[in-house]
Length: 256
Picture (cartoon, rainbow, N blue to C red):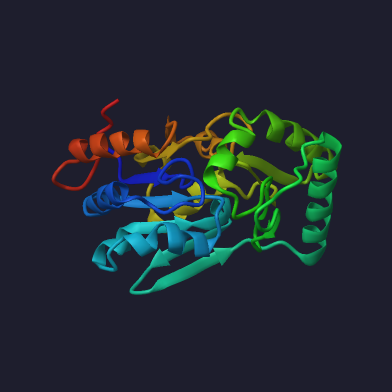
């Protein structure tokens, strides 16, 4: 029996940097009424507020929602208000090294672009995120830049050599996320176990980047039963199936 469903955000619950659409918001609200839910994403807290919380009712069901921004390097839980339980922040020296290495990796790969929209390298405190076309790039431009992850895999291979003491993961449509070594979505899964008292065997993870090097892969490596989806439309079908499989006690029987 499953007690917790964990989701990625960009590419899973919503399009990259976009808000939940109306159908997804309703499905997520229905799910929160019967089972605990967590969202782990590379985005920072302001993105969670904009993409997720702004589209959910501010009611008692939020007690069933855990939010883990920046790939699980932060943890927020609702106890009448949103409370930050931890944040695994970089030191200034670490940030300087990572940003310089990111810039060098892009230059060596030859995949720099002439036109960008917003910040390309963003300091999220506990995560440094590279967005090839900028944080505010149009969705259609982002979808076309690296749909098969080939460009980012090459950049990652250079980055792994330059900063071997850090975790480097691919996520979103154009992003590369860098966190402290071992501080990733697998770390977030372990924190969910500690905070909620729910074992890994009682969880399901749903994400779109479950391949080696993808920023969802660490969750699967943590031992969680994982479901790979192609996009939010497929996630909706998985949520509908999950709701259909929930017992009256709010536990989900594994239906696959």
